[in-house]
Amino acid sequence: MPTFQLASTVLGAPDPQVLADFYRELLGWEQKYAEPGWVMLASPNGYGLSFQSEEHHVRPVWPGEPGEQQQQLHLDIRVDDLAAASARAEQLGAVLAEFQPQEGVRVHLDPAGHPFCLFEQ
Image (cartoon, rainbow, N blue to C red; front, side, top):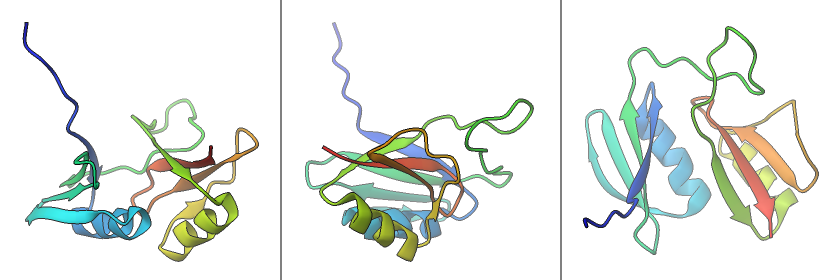
């Protein structure tokens, strides 16, 4: 039986380097590889977050609405100080989403419009 190991999550963006730079600064990860249309970040434990060029990228709508571009995934990011982490994300270019579904979680939109959640645990 073959083994499987998830190595990376890939997000589409109109400019993958801009989005990679945002997440590199937010997460403190290292940029491991870049070529036109593709950038790869790596966490200290080796997990990857990659970004590919999407010429016809359409920003997802949060929360979802019928007939609008739906999110395909979102990132959950654990933080040690929710208020400070939220402020840092906004300083780097994220936007706090108008709709917040629950206490203890802050939904933001990254520069390409992908939602991500910050939470304390």
